[in-house]
Structures are given as C-alpha cells and as structure tokens.
Length: 118
Image (cartoon, rainbow, N blue to C red):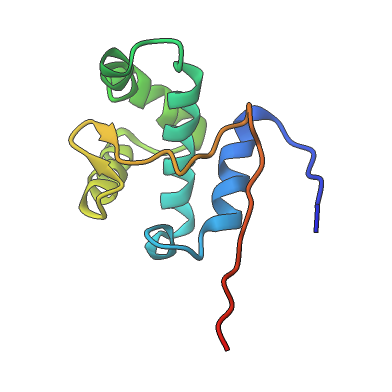
C-alpha cells in the first residue's frame, strides 16, 4: 500500500512521528511531547551540514530553544521541562538525540515489514 501525503519539510517530522507513535519509545509520549520531539528532529535536520558535536551544541543552545518555544507557542520553562522529560524517557541523552528514528525528509519513506506468526 502506498499513500501519498503532501507536506513541507517542517511538517514532515511531526507527521512521520504520528505514523510511528504506537511504537516504543514513542508510544509513551503525549501530543505536546511529540511536537517537541518533532521540533528537535527538524532542527537537527536543518543543521545537518554542521558536524554532529557542534550541531548538538547549537540544537540545545538557549537561542535555539527560544526559537523552538516561539514556534510551538510554549514558554522557556515548558520547553526545558519537555527536554527533561524526553531525557527521562532516554530519547535525549545529555545534549544529543539518542535516535532520529530514521525520519529524513530527503528520504521520506517509512516502511513497515510485519512478521506475522500463527
């Protein structure tokens, strides 16, 4: 089955997370937490040309977090709380994402292979 979805690179991350949110560890996240994760994934993508170590510093920099807060309509405290919560669920470790869940708008294919047992 192929379902075509018109989107933008910015919206893609949240839409992709919505598709896979029933899978661990995403299955424990609420909608606002998924919004925050999508924003982090987008900024990780946005700065992908920057070496990873420096990219993480930029991603968790105060100004970047304030930009994300503005985009999402959240306060600074709320953003920091969301990041702490994502750390608690091991989605963020220190100041890095533990996984990008292979969500990439340059290769926007999400494929499921079900292994069905009788």
